[in-house]
Image (cartoon, rainbow, N blue to C red; front, side, top):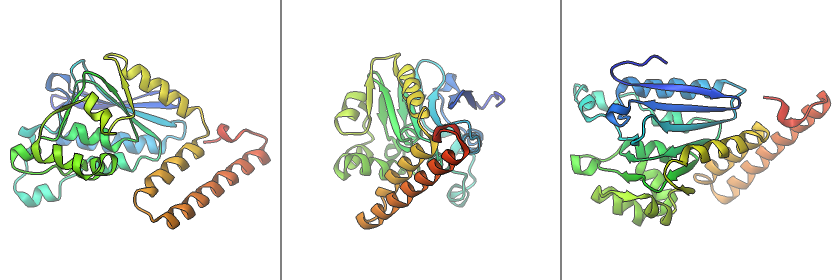
Length: 254
């Protein structure tokens, strides 16, 4: 995607792994409305490209994953109604069928925190800093921080940081269960790429079924979730049988 003065989102593909790169390093990868739509376009392309089996989100430059939405860009909304009906970049991330990994370094503030939380796994440098500062500006976040922090860490931890806007470091994020991999600074992308390659090496219908089962577990009753898992397993068996009849391995097919 073309770089513009307002920043850009790049989609890079290396075999079965794609990387969605927030590329506005001079502004700590702060997001503009144009970038919102570029994120959505990149997510749609990842979903539609059968050869891609896993995706990494990362920020360009050395200082930040993403410092959230550019507050100056928010001034472009004419009124509350325009904001209410804005284009939202988080639903396209949540719509990814492929496993998504956030490789986080430096600042992950506001919308940056929300992007990381919308991914399935988070690989985080020990030097990373998180916060949801929206309350200090007179509003609440609208990109899922309350939903995901509550589910990952519990309502008390979510309230602690959403009500205060306080920053917290990677060690604290790991302690409260927000991140899965804590690594030394500079190793987050290497570790995320290794993890993505491992996941992408499995049959894509299996990894997508696992993702669908886990996502479903957050919304379904136990009985519904068990039925969902069984249906997903049946589809995996059908895919394996289809591959057997064709004389291929299950992972050879998109």
